Image (cartoon, rainbow, N blue to C red; front, side, top):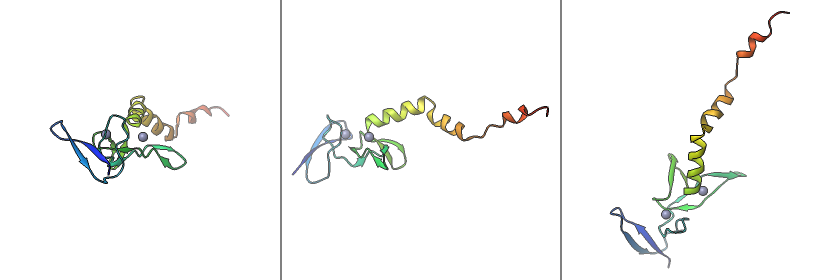
Amino acid sequence: MPCYSIHRKDGGKAILCGDLGPHCGDANCGDVGTYLCDYPVGDDKTCDMPLCHGHAFEAAPNIHYCPGHALLWREFRAAGGVTRELENVVPYKSKESTNEGS
Ligand SMILES: [Zn+2]
Ligand SMILES: [Zn+2]
C-alpha cells in the first residue's frame, strides 16, 4: 500500500497510506497527484504529470500545469505570446492605400 506525505494547511505534513492514485510528479513531493498536467506536448497528447494541489498551477479553470510547464506558460505570456497570436489574426488594412495611380 503506497504512503503519501500530505501537505497540511498549517504548513506541516501528514503521512497517509492507502491507494489514492499516483504520487505528485515533483521529485521532492510525496503528496497525492490529484491533478494531471494539461500542457499540450503534441499529437493530441498532454504532459499528464500527476500533480498535488500545491504543485498544480491553474492556468485556466480545470486546466493545470506542472511546475516546469507553468514556467513555460508564464514566459510565453510575459513575452507577449498570447497578444502576438491575436495580432496575427487581425487582417491589416494599411495596404489598401498603396494602389494609387493606375
Ligand atoms: Zn506536489
Ligand atoms: Zn507538464
